[in-house]
Image (cartoon, rainbow, N blue to C red):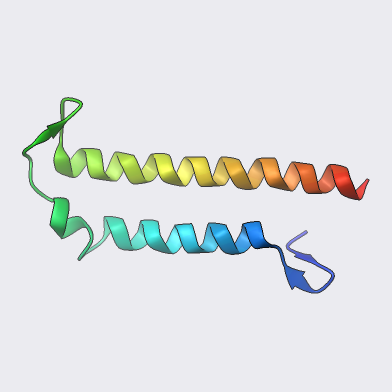
Length: 77
C-alpha cells in the first residue's frame, strides 16, 4: 500500500512535505512571527488563529490522502 512497484506514491511524499511544513509553522521560528494577541482574526487572537489554520491544513491533507488511497484501491481491483 505504501509502495507501488517499489516506488513511494506521490501522495505520500506530498503528505510528508505538508507535515514538515506544518511542524515548522507551529514551532519556533514560524510561530514566533505570529505569536501576538492582536490583530484578531475571526474573533480569535492571531496566535490561536495561526495554530487553527494549520490544523485545518493538516486535516485537509489527510482527507486528500484518504480519498486518493481509496481511488488507488478501486483501480487495483
